Image (cartoon, rainbow, N blue to C red; front, top):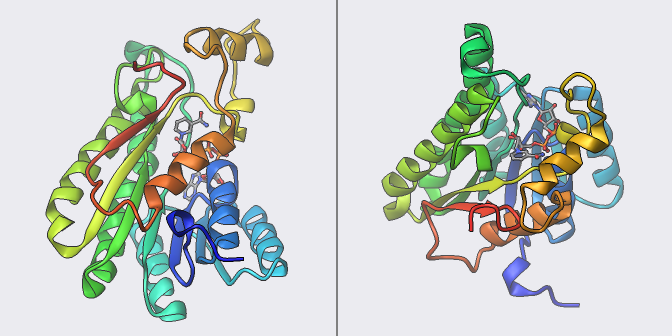
Length: 260
Ligand code: NAI
């Protein structure tokens, strides 16, 4: 059966960081079954290799490597492996990220600010730094950076995360303008709380159960629920569509109406 052209990734080479879990693993599956060849990186090597085996067994052409996005050399090597293994890079999704402990600005230690900066901000910067030259060579490509609703507005008790995720949007918009003339689109996605392991495994404030905490978060959303991972990944696929040719430099909220 012919694939819907809007979500047809036949033959495209897609790199995803933070691919072992949550959005990354789901997106890898969705792109793979729609024809993409995959280059996957994550710091969690066993979980990444298990995913690569599963996708390989399903007939998807996949390469996977341990990659710590806070290290420029790892990001450089992951991008280079796309060119070495497949001869091109069409799609890059800078998705790897970490959650912060919950604390107010005045209680946030410098080390936590640095940790967020290293992974959530510099991970995206190092990624694009080594992905964009490969795309420029072919004058074509799509980058999607994973920010957050915490990148669009204040986020009480997670200032280090919010600061890094705001920076992701600044990087995205700047790279979009710099690279539009090279046929490269760069966008960001900004999800509200989503039921991936990052949120289901969240350390809740003392005395509050995980389900009560999730209900508290959901109460702040007009849809009165958190997002399912599939709902965010659908928006990611849309932003990566080869048919979305005139959309660049955008930060798309996927938030059940929180920002409406
Ligand atoms: P997750 O925890 O399920 O997946 C994150 C993945 O990133 C894990 O596989 C982890 O091993 C990997 N990772 C962590 N540090 C890394 C590093 N230094 N180098 C390479 N890989 C690393 O979480 P989820 O929810 O799938 O998160 C993906 C992205 O979505 C993150 O950037 C997160 O900040 C963002 N996000 C998540 C939201 C949510 O509610 N789940 C909401 C808004 C944004």
